[in-house]
Image 1 (cartoon, one colour):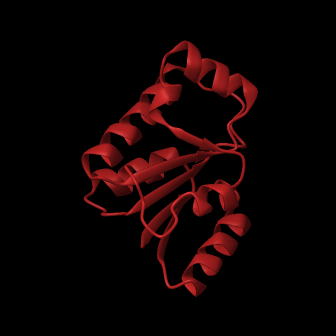
Image 2: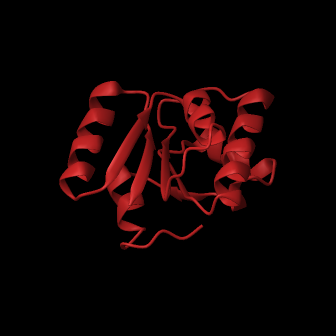
Image 3: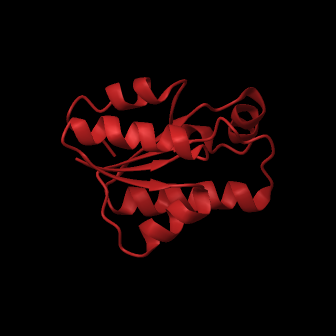
Length: 122
């Protein structure tokens, strides 16, 4: 499986990258939503994208637009998308804007990874 991990903590990102590589996955790492969007829009083909938003404390309309664009791009490429660490404020905002139903949301990276069960679902 080719996985794109979006993690703002470089140490945690490298750890996840190493653990997944040990499981024979091909893993790319992006340090934010903008970088992830660039990789996906540039033609990157991923089976799965895990977007860790635990460090996100504020989201404006541009950030919501970026999340919607990431969803649209991954959906059109049949890439499974998982959000991790969605806090109450972001969850409430996604719910109010009716975007929450677009995403599969998990508390931890482990839970998101376990959700794939060897075959990602878009």
